Image 1: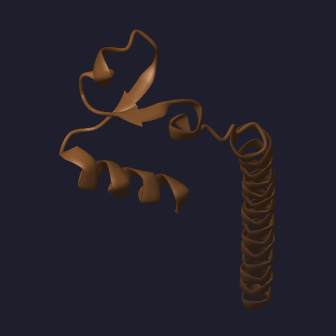
Image 2: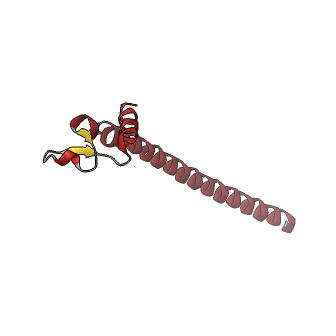
Image 3: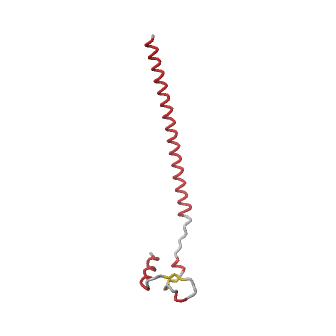
Length: 100
């Protein structure tokens, strides 16, 4: 009789332990699913922000198209100009670089 009660107690303890482990496993899986969902939403928002705000709203600005390229002193003209150092070869380099 004592042996049977001891086996029943051990069996009940094993069942309770298995139930506890299963509950912990479920909780761990729930947290992992929640974190994966959060990461998926975060990545989707990052992609949306990058495409809408950064890429779509970008304006191409090329000042060399709007201004003349002159010497540093602008040939003493009062208008807006783009100047460069280094003489004619440097200016030629800046023109080629702005085209490419």
